[in-house]
Picture 1 (cartoon, rainbow over the protein chains, first blue to last red):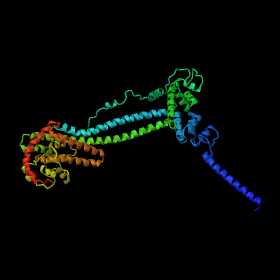
Picture 2 (cartoon, rainbow over the protein chains, first blue to last red):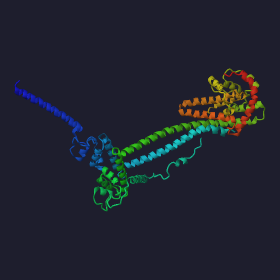
Picture 3 (cartoon, each protein chain N blue to C red):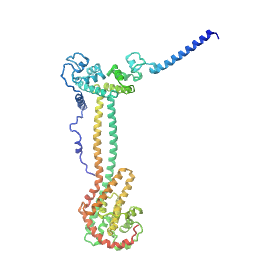
Picture 4 (cartoon, rainbow over the protein chains, first blue to last red):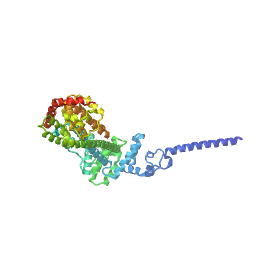
Length: 159
Length: 376
């Protein structure tokens, strides 16, 4: 084979190798950045380019646009990103979910927000605890009564 | 039914000045006020007051007279505003306040301050964490309440059953007492009928010849069966005793520690009407022999066993506890009965005296009977 041809082949093979490499890189790249290649809900809402290092991307999928909209309306995107950065990566999803819950509650009830629900639940807990104490007292009384009835039955019923 | 006392003693446990009211807003107001007071107490700093509110101080700007945040963020508590600013941001708070009425603003700010405080304390979960904890506590309390209520239901049904049987026994005893009163002046044999009268009226109207009178004994066979069965055949024409097995008969003989009074007492506490009858029958035999008196306690145990069998069907461990309780009471009463001090009513004592009188005479007359009767 002439030298020209071998060089061509060599360049071709390198080309293929590079392309493969780039393709591989591209696959990794798209996998890291939401491999669908569509912007996250936050970037869609904010109308900006959703980069690979977007803070919101893992927690605000494009399928749930209202989630970020609510959070942004109440807390603001910058506050949310600050909060997320202060929290450990493995806890960020929980943080985002709690923020979404609080934002939704605040939108439904602008005066009390989620604190209203907390108040209702606390009242319910107190009521249940009270009821439990009363029922336990009844139970103790019955248990004592059944043991004491044998004494009183004899004494009270003879004659 | 048992005596139901009021819940007054338990109300003492709960504070009288409970902040919760029935009006939703009022209770929330009080709730938020309490929260805010707690926060202020935590975060109050000493220092002189200045014109700028905490919000304007934080933003390093001049606090205007109409600053919307000034009423809610006093300068002495900068941390409050820091929390709020970190979570909501000034713009968000101002937007929220603008949307609300004047009346609603203080409440809204209180809830915002509380929410920010909780977020500061728990950066990951915030108020959602508190909500979930409360929901879990509610679930726990409800589960516990269900269990306690089911237990209470069980006790109530048992109590109803006992009361029903006790009521039946009262009627029987009343009838028996009437018969006793009639026959008090008769001779020993008729006095023996006193005890039998209880049984008679329970089963049939005709008077049954006492076991220990010579005539009935001679008329009857010499039973080879268990002791209880022999009693029933002699004493009652139509009465069929409960199906006590021979083992229980043997069990009767093994115990030698009982007093008549104990046995008599527990007749009225019997849950099983059949067992009561049997007790009556065997009581009179036992009067005649002090050694046989031990049978009485075993008959009590037999009743307990029958009760036990009944209760086993329900398959509840607490009934076993109840039986143990009952047995403990029996044991306690055995110790009391010796001193003859445990009788609560005079009629009980009267009957006991009569039975004691009967016992001596019966000892003699029944000596021959026992020689004929098989014990096992």
